[in-house]
Length: 560
Image 1 (cartoon, rainbow, N blue to C red):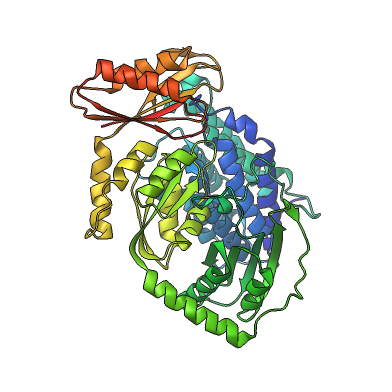
Image 2 (cartoon, rainbow, N blue to C red):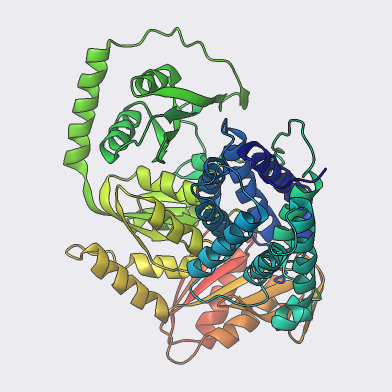
């Protein structure tokens, strides 16, 4: 059956089908990652991002393509994880802008929307590289523009777009030498084509379609991780819903945040033009719902009993205080909030209790558990920001794959002024926090932090997750990898040997301080052996050893 127009219902089905196809193939996309270290994984990050878009589009009751695409873009923006996920979310964002004002979309409309998506994604990346997802996305948009002049059939149009996308994907190793060395095409580009292939496979399907569920290891409530201590559950019920209200203003959103802060934590309160999204951990879901109902109607209600680790029905007949008393409580809490407001707050991403304690002692307000293998989403970062009573917030991503998600949070947050210091490692983040001094304004402190991290070299020691060839190095699964500032410089057979070799490359006569953070799989005795090696070979350097307790990385070492 030929299809010449997409309405909102059909577009929603195609987005869901694309998300499901990528989710089914995410492991094959993960396997294309060039770097053989434990990573956030392109396929997993893209899958979680597109699933977030699909869940939002699934909630639509509209037949308009502009309304459905706007919902999907909002879901992708807040659910974006890792650089690949952020770029994907920007493709959704631009695509949505390209469909503004349209009830239905023709091939011409879709071609223009794809081009708008590519333009938006390129603008989001400071230094775009060819041979990446951006190249494949641009190729798809170019094919779409050409095909829109040749056919009005959306199925024929989509087939042609995908075929040309694969042609260009096959050429990505010639554009990026690291892809050719590893013998793979670009993972992000392949992930994007899986989304389009899923849509094509379901183009003529008329029945209902549901969003796939991620595996248990991925279906983590990351918002619960956005706190310094998450080993104990303070509030029992994870409560989520949407408030349907026309054009919510900042005062309304801030009032909700203040109130939710009196009954729970892990608060997300973000608004669009027609909805307010609420996420809160509380012992009294009924109170949160009662407050929301005073503003608008509810949809998407979900309550999980986190202590029992499964969804339960909640008895909403619990006695609640009179509305007057609730209002009085809000006023009291808002007064407390005003009194306790800080000039500058700090959010840091960290993995490992020891490293998190270090950041806490240096003045970080909220620590998001994450890093390699667990890249927090933009919404996780927004959630952390909401927990801090400060007008200005400085964010330390501490991982190159989280910087774009942090920068995207800046664009989405309207209630506070955000600053991102582009820290690529934990040592850079720790060095930045030493700039935390009274009397500095947020902009001045951000610049001081950016300058401070330039003096830091990061040594990290981990293991290879697969066989590969990287540069002139043959790497076997299980080999120990020594990295200097994210570049693999040493391949060894044991941790001690690899660590010492990469330190020889990292330490120069200009260095004065070396800090060793040892991981959860390293003993204190083993760490002391590395410290003794440094003292013996670099007597002019001060050495400090601390238990970072980080997973995956045997050592993270700061050389300054």
